[in-house]
Image 1: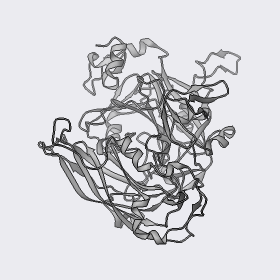
Image 2: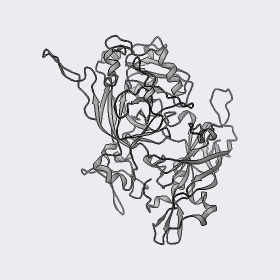
Image 3: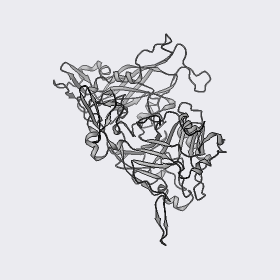
Length: 578
């Protein structure tokens, strides 16, 4: 757990959450200015250690932290269940309110302003309070939550929006008895509004909708920090990537190996050179992928700045464990070399296409969502057989992440709409079959929870992609993030936010001049990495993709070799595909 400080950001977290979520409390529905909307409300119960307290003024003491309820649309769940990046609503119950009934039992800080007092180890209390979130649009929603024990949550800063080590996790849980026996958590689903035709297209009644009695339990201490990471290298041993000298002295000019982990670029027509039945593939399948080498935390030269205001970045070794179903059976990745069922491992790696309309590289493209699923090869950097994968967490100080040359394109709000998994070729350059749609599609449908999935031939969508590492607890870390760039809003040393444009100075510091002086923070360059899908090695190859009979796609459904369903309206216009 990060050491508690006297930062004034402890106090305003509830007010900030209301600002970020646009409203808190009652939802007005009685005029044209306030259209019908929904309210979700209930009780949050905390079971855990006594909280810490901080003296904000000579005469006032506040409880550190708050109970945070993150309200997710079921069609936009966060990884690993989905590809959502932001909660639809945030509800916060301040620690002062949650622990009001046991104020005499709380630790008392010293008389100096900023003094912090924490309870002795082994304390355990149960307290409850009411919570309310709104306006909530029509749809089906899940409530996930945590108690921010160390007070570092900020709804305005993405790097401070998820739980860290020592926080108490939970939510509106459907299977509490199973969770106590070590099973995976299943969250309850709540309908806001009505679904008149049973298709999942919810509508808001003219009188609005209120869903009451939602019980949120926060009782699971989180024993690990978020998977904070930085790239330390890249491996590129793809056949044909590097210049090679044969035994007879002939020189084969390669297409150029990727060497800079901060600037990895894949061609949008990336294809395998040999097929899965080739003996070379079976023995060294990992070498056919571009692979990132990741280490925990930030770069060594950035560590002092990372733990200081405004970042307070908490990190530790990666915690690796096999991805299992609710019965405890290890899941495999959809595709595997012959004779080797490959285990799916946490943390999972997800490359999400960034919104090209923004120049800050800080937000994923909302619709269509385009993701490339990485493959966690563990520390060894090789495929892990299903039988050897550990179902118990193990710590590792390095991960290798392979980049699949396959993009998944989906409409995040329409679960019945076809999901396209596109790859430049289902056949390797030597003619070997790489993947059969009839085998891959059912596995992807089960993994994504979408009934209509099609594996089709198509060149990858151009653009920049962020990398997300995600634990089964929902704890995650994303690069690029706010620590790696100057922003259009300013992070102060106190962790608060000011409007205005930061300017990057030659010394790697973001600065902005304000009335009281100059605000400055060090940029963490290791947190600015992106993956780029660039131009094709062979434009004619992409242009030659004129449809996919298996998926029922024709030339009219493609734009320069990429399915139109994977491109935004702006991209279609820029590419001349109207």
